[in-house]
Length: 447
Image 1: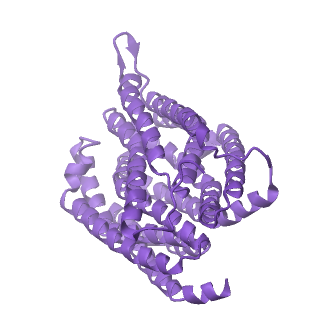
Image 2: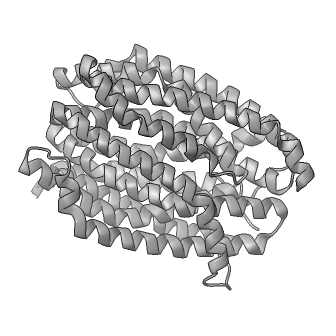
Image 3: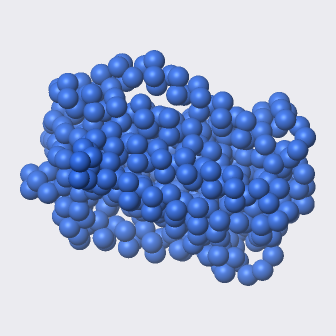
């Protein structure tokens, strides 16, 4: 198939880096959408930031649900590419798009019907903030339909070894978002700005443009099969692989909502701190997510081709890269917390709270990076059920830990609970995968 790369041949580290760097750049761009919104919205004050932060939980929930389709489709496409089954890969692609569109439309209807209950759950204490949050949520929910398609496009192309094209297309969307944000939020000349609603419209517009570019730029690649419009068997395989990861990510989002409910006891400023902190942390999350995507594609193709020694070598090299990056991010968060946080909010009281957040969360960044990269390794081999077992178990512990630690340490106790669970997840998952590597030869014999 045009626009694909064989990941089963050639030196491992250069192959990984060629695939990883464009994915990292693409993830940075996806993250920057939220960062740009937050920088501009931050100039409106902590109330609008809290409004955006509250609505964002439900936008993240939509993306978490979409992994049921994107993860499974990416895995099956990479397996088919490694095995040389091009037509079957195209069939998986077509069914993936059908499922994504249906899911996006169902979720949009759900949000429109349940918006009052969802935002009201947080009891933000201000009718104005709640109204801003609902407006942001409704417009952003329309954008999630396009976001799901964009993520699926990128996942499919990455699985085929073509990680540069998503980077180029997402770059156009980012530039458009950067240009529209200040215009729509604050206005210019006689055009009156729309505040938080303007930020949502800017991102929605950028997402629509990105979807159109993906459609136009990939037509010549022949991604989608012309036959088999609806194949239940293929859909079941995709969902079977994606459901464990979806359960994990949905659980993570729901737990984040509960944690936010705990945090709101310290007021809207605390919610704003959490939202900005998550945005800053997403830089590390999305960067290592690039390596996760590359590892999943690399392992997927090599697993399909039964190149198991190559898988072992690839994991060890990726773990070294992950550790170096994780240590760097940890030091950055711990040594320069105020400088990072003041990019978004200028109020000294909130910045002081942000410094504590960054230093505490900074201690867990190395382990968070190790966890994410190892999840990619499990996913690439189709073992998507293993990471969620550990992730859900230790993420759920955040709730009782937050309640317990917040008694002596206040708001910082909540951040400690989050950091501690990340440390445990990273250590346990890496140890479990190393144990799994020792069984690969037995697996090869069975297969």
